[in-house]
Amino acid sequence: MDVADTTSMSTIPRTPAIVTRRDELRAAVAAAKRQGRSIGVVPTMGGLHAGHLSLVDAACRECDFTIVTIFVNPTQFAPGEDFEKYPRDLEADLRSLSVHPVNLVFAPADGEMYRPGHATYVEMGGLAKVWEGACRPTHFRGVATIVLKLLNMTAPDVAYFGQKDYQQSLLVRRMVDDLDLDVNIRVCPIVRDADGLALSSRNVYLGKDARRRALALSASLALAARLVEEGRRQADPIRAEIERLLSETPGVRVQYVAIVDPETMQEVDRISGRTLVAVAAVVDGTRLIDNRLIGDEAPAAGSLSPA
Amino acid sequence: MDVADTTSMSTIPRTPAIVTRRDELRAAVAAAKRQGRSIGVVPTMGGLHAGHLSLVDAACRECDFTIVTIFVNPTQFAPGEDFEKYPRDLEADLRSLSVHPVNLVFAPADGEMYRPGHATYVEMGGLAKVWEGACRPTHFRGVATIVLKLLNMTAPDVAYFGQKDYQQSLLVRRMVDDLDLDVNIRVCPIVRDADGLALSSRNVYLGKDARRRALALSASLALAARLVEEGRRQADPIRAEIERLLSETPGVRVQYVAIVDPETMQEVDRISGRTLVAVAAVVDGTRLIDNRLIGDEAPAAGSLSPA
Image 1 (cartoon, rainbow over the protein chains, first blue to last red):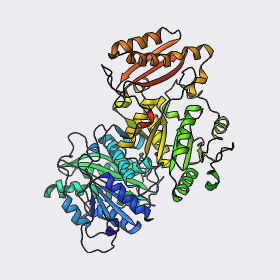
Image 2 (image 1 turned 30 degrees about the vertical axis):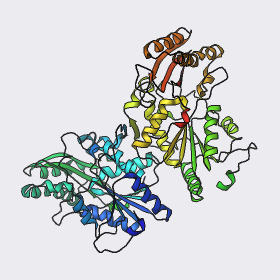
Image 3 (image 1 turned 60 degrees about the vertical axis):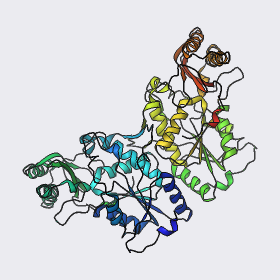
Image 4 (image 1 turned 90 degrees about the horizontal axis):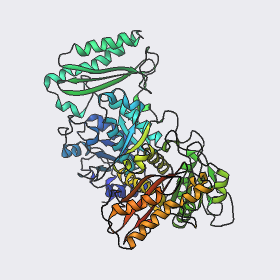
């Protein structure tokens, strides 16, 4: 693979260089580093949408060599979750990437990421056990393990994550600091459809009715923001209003409504300063999450810096 | 810190450069890498003896820039084990290192390795749950976590471990492969006192009588080797003879006698080809381990290569 051929800044549609083996990936990274280029990586599970592409754009803007990884990671799905039906369309993903100056796509072959005898996992306590971690007890173990593996393979200067998976982004920052990795974690804002629905690869599961009902999530977060703007500060009644809005929507089953400190994800009694509201709900069988930073000092999520 | 000053190959006794903070360590590593030097790291808990120094010598011989880390890692000790009394004498360790061309000693300050809110651990299954892992259920979690942290901080080309901790060396190789770390693991032979006792930082716990009784471990391994040389092949009776030799020694309490495949540490019924015999025993209150590769094709442990 000629790495030099992959660096064009042209936006003429083209297929980015694809590697499927970790030794090829490592060689390409080493070549880019020898040229003194900074590396940006965007880890994805494919099913690329405008949210992912905003991360890709940030990486292409901020780094000299942008790697997008596409791998549906089995260890972050529990039995009975949607691993089998998760959207996989590499050709569509490559078309989406073709108008971005991505240098390399790593789409590992089967058996390349978890090899026979694999026995090593990253286990996190604390933050990993609440909210998403309580609903999906093995999820963050799988996420932390695959993110660590991808960071080790790509040795990036910057890795990009979306605020939609807010708790994940906090955990990745925690892991990076705890394990002394030399990488900056950038968290980019949620991208939404015009009607407010947070983009998610799982939105393709939603039928027309479910798609409409799913708007209850972003609507409930907008309600929370409005209540705080109106001067409401007590978390309990705001949570109650969010829960009411969600549970009054047919087909929506609430999993949690979290009104929390945005660094620790510990519940707050009173909203003072920047606060995270995060919700999870199952809409006609599809589990969706969304979140919003509210309160006086709610900046863009991109300013989240490594701990 | 002037890295260039630390590279003398002179064997005139001198104090190696010492850093106590991870940012200093990272800066020194980055400087060495910019100069195109290969990095070797020898992770230790101090209490340096000739076994450690053989690893240091190998690193100095094979790499351009040798780092020795000295840190008594609390997470690999269970409550009730010897974390508090483990030998700590940095000055003595530095004197031992002063005649070796070590470039840098990393002796982290309190609070530098595990910082407030630390929540991330490396958990390993399989091999981590037998023998040492069965006797010390949280031990390898602590070992894997600290080794990963030190590898991430030092970004070495080669990391050096002693065969005395045979199972640990297998697990480190497994972790390195499972987590896609770009480092070679070298395992160096056990260094023994003239009477056969395997060197260990914990030997300082042994009184005169216990020191003599502790020879039962290496003697039992020599017995196993002799039995195999004499043509014995069945593991059970050999194990029985090892156990008898150990348990007939006053003050020695056997924890395990493992006759196993040297790659998987699974028990073998019949000794054919290279086989590992590993023993653990408590001698007058001090837990000791030892091992020996026996059988037709028992090479030096240094030839263990990454999986």
